[in-house]
Amino acid sequence: MALPSSGTITLNEIHIEAGGTTDTLASINDADIRALIGKADGAEMSFNEWYGASAGIVVTVTEGSNIFVSAAYYGFREEQNPDIGSVSPTSITFDGKTHPVRDAYRRVARSGGVDNDTTSAFWFILYNASDGTVPADDWFTSVSVQTSGASASLAPAEATIVTSGSGATGRKEWRWFSSDFTSTELSNFSSQWDGSGTSTVTFTE
Amino acid sequence: MTITLNYDTPAEGQARLSGTYETGEASGSFSCPIVYNAEGQDIITTEARTRLTIQESLDSELT
Image (cartoon, rainbow over all chains, first blue to last red; front, side, top):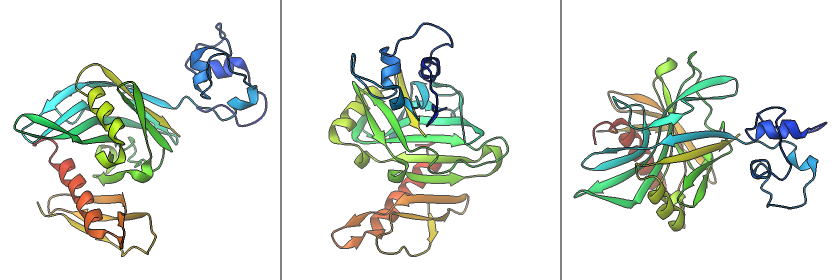
């Protein structure tokens, strides 16, 4: 939940938003607190700069690999049995509804046993809420996908969005094509989402 | 797989295209950016990207 946009704001509130524990030691210059507003170590800061600041919704993907003849998938795929990889948290809440995460992966075309990383696309898929509520196309303003040594920022306006099914098993998919990444981002994306380790996906509402 | 897209003709300058799709076995809705080129709206490419996404979604457990 974002910090208030006006009024009194305390260091404790900022600390909690950054993921800290209430009433524990914190400093305005701590890296996680500065990160909320993108400040460098030792930079001059004012409390009103934290108005509306949000840590976003962070989804951590423990990557698995799912390799077929013509495509490979690296990341989390709940649609497979058993699941490929894992994700934490397993569901995310926004607009008052909780949506299980179905998939978060890099998909790449594959031929002759070799991935063509220039075709890498990022997919993020949510199930509807338990009452059938379909997530809005633009429930987030941007999503930051961890890449090797950096991140790529993607917007829902760039995504191809597909809605399938209904009720709690219905789903919505956001897909970004390789052309939505710069060449450097695409290379770093492919290096990071290789089926090993963990990668983060951070949504800003 | 034949994927049929249904949508209203977009106005010039429109950013996104929204509609429904049918494959015979599955159906749903879509929303995608409209691709523009030097001549204006490139609906062929826009449709191709959307069909590819739907196909890859439906085939994702098989390919």
